[in-house]
Structures are given as C-alpha cells and as structure tokens.
Length: 561
Image 1 (cartoon, rainbow, N blue to C red):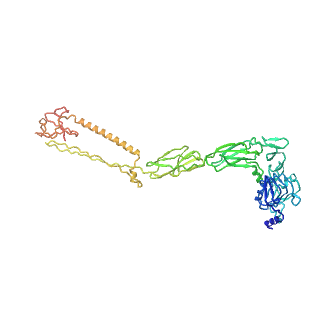
Image 2: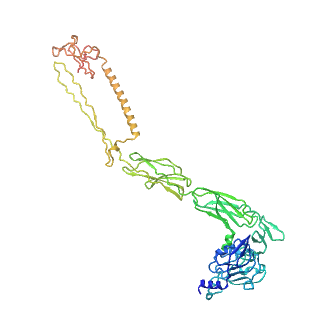
Image 3: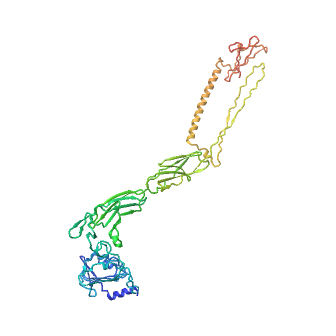
C-alpha cells in the first residue's frame, strides 16, 4: 500500500481532532482535549509547556524528523495519556527526560496511559516487516511505573539493536549520563557520576553534589602550525567544582569555538569533550591572543590566556633592481630593501639573468659586477627568503648593453731639416736659419662597434672628465716650465755680446780689418744681433797663430743671420 494513503487512512480512523492549544504560565490546554503532533512545527508549539492539561498523541509518520523530541524538554506532567505511534524517523525519547508524571485521567483505548507502538522504518509496509530494524530506542529502558499514576502501558514493535544505558543510569531516555532516569551513585548538576567532582560539595544522605563555578582551564597553550594556522591545547581545570559541560574559545575577543556535552548527546556518540582546536585562515607572521573558559551547570568560570605568532609566510614581491653601466664591461646593481610584513627577511639573492651571483643574510644596497662580456645585454632580478620554503622574486630590472673597448691611433709626421753650405766668397756669408717643421698629431681614431651610435661616443662619465681636466692642467704647467727654461738658456748664450742694436747700421771702421788671404778690405757688412743660436767663425792671419781662447785677440766673434 502507498505509505501516504496508509497514513491518511489510519489518521482518519484513529486520530482525534487536535484543536487549538491554549497557553498560560507554562500550562497548555488543547481545546479538543488531545493535542496531535504530525509535523515538526506542531511539536515546536509545546516547547514552553511544563504541564499539558489533556492528552498527547504523536503520529509523526515520515514528516516528524526531530529524532529526539527535544521541544518536549520542559514537559513535566501530562494529565491524560501519552501515545507515540508510527513515527518512523524517531531515534530516542530524549525530550521526555524531565517527564515526572502521567496522571492517566483519560486512558487511550480505555486502558493505556502509555502506548508506544510501531515506531520503526517502513512500519507502514507490513509485507516487508522484519525482526531486525532501525527505529525508536530506549522506550523499553524507562521505568514507566515510576511515572504512571493510573492505567497500563503497552510498548512494542519499536527499534532494535539499540545502545544500552550509561552504567551510571537506572533507566534512561537516551545515551549518556545526562539522560538517566535515576543515578546509580551520585548526581552532580545534570549528570550521574560515580563520585563528586573535586571542589563540589556533597549533601549528606541525598547523593547530590553541589556544584559551583569552575576554575580556569589548565595548561592552555598556543602553537603555530604554519603561516595560516595555530594549534590550541588545554586540559580540564585542576578544580572543576562540578562536571564540565563545555568550553568557549575566543580569539582577540571574538568567539571562534565552543563545544558541549550536548553535542555528543545529540549525535548519540559516547565520548569526552574535545581539549584541542586548530584555528585556521590566519595571516602570516601575525600575533594572535586567545582566551578560553569552561562551564558547569552553574555557569562559566575564570579564563586562561595564551598567544603566539603564526609562522613566516611568502614575502611580498620585492622591487626590481636598477642597473647602471660603469664602463665597457662593468655594471653596478642598485637594490631596494624588501618588506618584512610576512616575516623577517633572512636572505637576499641576486641573479644576473638566471644565474645567481651573490647571496647574503643581510640587505645590501648595491653590488658591482666586473669582467662581463662585451656587446652583451644584461638584466637582473632579486630573490628574498623568509624561510627555506617561502620566497619570492622581483621582476627583471632594466636592461643594459656592454660596449667594445675604445682604441686610440696616433700618427706623427716629422720633417727633416737639411743644411747646405755654400763655398766662401769675398762677400760675407749670410747664415741661413734652420727651419723646424712642427710635429703634426693626428686626432685619435675610435674604432666603433657597428651597434654603437655616435651619441654614445660623445658620452663620458664624470670620472673620465675629471681625468681629462687633470691631464690638461698638468700639460699646461709642464709647457710653462719648458718655456721658462728655454728663455733662461737663450739669455745665458747671448750674455757675451753687449752693445747697441746695430741692425741695419753701417759697420764701424774699427770692425774693418785686412784679410791677408783675399788681400782686400772687407766690405762694411752689417752685423746683427739675433736670438738664434750664434755661429762662431775663426779668422786667422799669418802673423797671428790660431787663438786658444776667446780672450785671444786673434779670435773674432761674428754673428750670422
């Protein structure tokens, strides 16, 4: 049979009309006398009811998916009867853990104050009925006789292979020590325990432990896992003052995690509260502060604190280097310090092209590279590290091209001076001055690479200009010294000739003498004082021997032009 048709048929035959639910000060009264629950919304209407003046009929079918009936957690008394029938999604009756009495003023089918039947998967399909099935558990583990005041109970055909009650329980509504009907030993807060926790007070003859606010969690630590995660650990307080029911964890005053024993209870997994948490999605090399606190049934206690940094991450991309060409095959690379926002920079490595040329532990602002290949293009980039696994490269720098070395060719032209002697004639010989052709120096010729432009030939570094200025000054000073010495030498050579300037004046008679060789009187040829080197000529007579010195009267000095 179709499941929906079957549910509708059963509902039309058996289910009473639900009517309106009136509420007043925790007491809820169905207008028809019976409140019928078919959906999650209808069971939510009972969440603030402590007393139900009437009957409760739960027929969830496939629609009621609140597997634990948690909205009924405040319900303590039902004046009529309780029916749970054909609710296939239910797991347990945890929501009835605070139910204290079913008065049975009205009985279902005139005999039952509790009727819990056929709550398992596919209970509507009788042809597929089997003895091992999933369904409602713990209905058979409740001591209903302690709750029922009148009438009988019928509990059958529910879930099988269910978990057992906690060892601290006498009867239970679900797993765990907080859903016991009664405690074997002691009750602390809402939990059954074998002995009272440290710090709680035992009330004589009541098996009750009086709880208080807990101490702070013990040994709370924060440890960096990587650049985006921190692992946190803690332990239960040394003095819990009761049963610890949960923890709350804050990062920089923002709640990021909480756990509770209720989470285990709702998932029906027996276990202890987690004592660790991994905080993820954090920023690299950033300090984070944490605080944690725990609670008992009384409330939250004192906090514990811890802080740490995340590990270094990938550094931001550094700025590109800048290259300056110093001379033909030497460059200087200028660098910029990298940002340490993702962790301290522990290493700088410079690459020319793809080849590493230098690596240092500290920042360096420039680096000079010599003996590079001529007429070759070069560019650089920088790599920085925060640790061995985290590094980043800059973009490549500007590109420079090395140049061919400059070649200088000097051509010197020398003119040779030839002196021709003319035979002596009666006429005094006029000396021919020696003419010296100045040396001609050809300007240096630069052999330029085919790739080098005329504009590059005219560029000189500041250092080269300083050298030229220095050489020019030195040559000028040397020239002055040479001219001074030449002047001194000339003055010394002309010091033996004194008298007036006789250029273009007739030769005085006392300078005319008889030349016995030619037997004629010398003509009155002018004698000129010149600044050329004097040429000395000896003239002798038979009456006077060859003079031995300039003081000898037979020695006459004649200056020729």
